[in-house]
Image 1 (cartoon, each protein chain N blue to C red):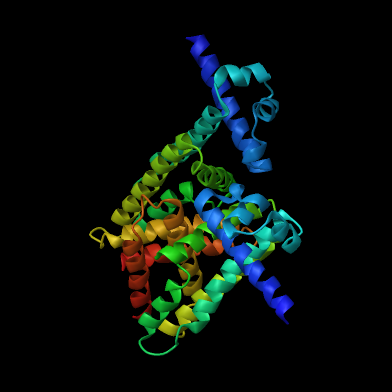
Image 2: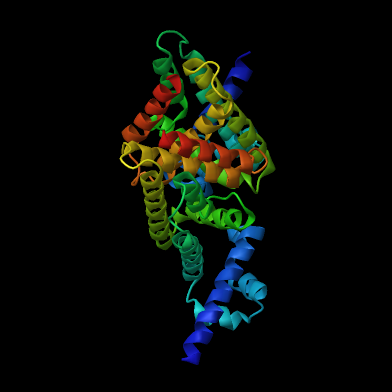
Amino acid sequence: MPRTVDVDARRDRLVAAVCEVAVRDGLDAVTARSVAAAAGLSLGAVTRTFASQEQLHAAAMRAVAERVAARSAAVPRIGDPVRCALALLDQVMPFAEETRAEAQVYYAYVARARAVPALAAIADEVDAALLASCAEVVALVAPGARPAAVVELHALTEGIAFGLVTWPHRRDAAEQRQVLADWLVRACG
Amino acid sequence: MPRTVDVDARRDRLVAAVCEVAVRDGLDAVTARSVAAAAGLSLGAVTRTFASQEQLHAAAMRAVAERVAARSAAVPRIGDPVRCALALLDQVMPFAEETRAEAQVYYAYVARARAVPALAAIADEVDAALLASCAEVVALVAPGARPAAVVELHALTEGIAFGLVTWPHRRDAAEQRQVLADWLVRACG
């Protein structure tokens, strides 16, 4: 079905362009025109693929979430539990360039979600997925830990991620990652 | 100096009105007109007090920060360290209605700070003050703790505060406060 492949490929290219513009210039700069330019496609290609700006944004937010989920699923669940847990969290947390760009887009959408119901629904799904990741991490490093440990790790990861995205000049990614690693080691004990 | 008192009182009233409108309708709804209406003052009173929308916002953000700082300063530093630390954090964290409104305004400003240098400078000051509060709390409950404990508490409080403001339907304030209290007790041990 070459037609479907073409449509899917165009969609992927446009979603990547949304993320590119959002990270570079902020969400307000994401328009059909700027996305078409970033994708190297026509304005018509954008408007044929997405019926509205809201659909474009929802697709981009979902794409970021799916990319993170796919990488997390691919992490081998074997070997040292703390190392394994940290490898999982490295897929989500903005410690590297790629994850930092994803988290920037995510928090920009979360800030906008209040006014856009379609985004709020996806933001809720992503938050639920992050909570599930924290539950998996706690089960790995401290099977049988108090349930509040999951709530604490969820808050800690949120604080670290939001802090790195919001205060890049006031936070050090390596230091924040070490705080998380230390938490995992203490949870083991 | 009755003139100064009048000017200060009007300023306070307008700043309170900014916060009221921002919490109720979001920052985008904060205009000279909506603030004048909420304060029960004339449009001229707003434009005479603040030369620009940016000045109005900067004054409101600073007012929120000063109110939190004044309450924190008034907390007695005596008695059980964990109870004292929690009393301090209760002035900052959005566990109650008043602090929740303050945190809503704060995070709305933080989201906007990227585009408004005057707000970014105040946001940096507030973040530095929050870090100092965390340092004081750690010094109270665990004098001589590893320095990373302050970084961890800073991230944990950020995650809890941002979570409560952003996901009020997905977070429980009492549960989040208990997570913080448990952290303080463990830090003591």
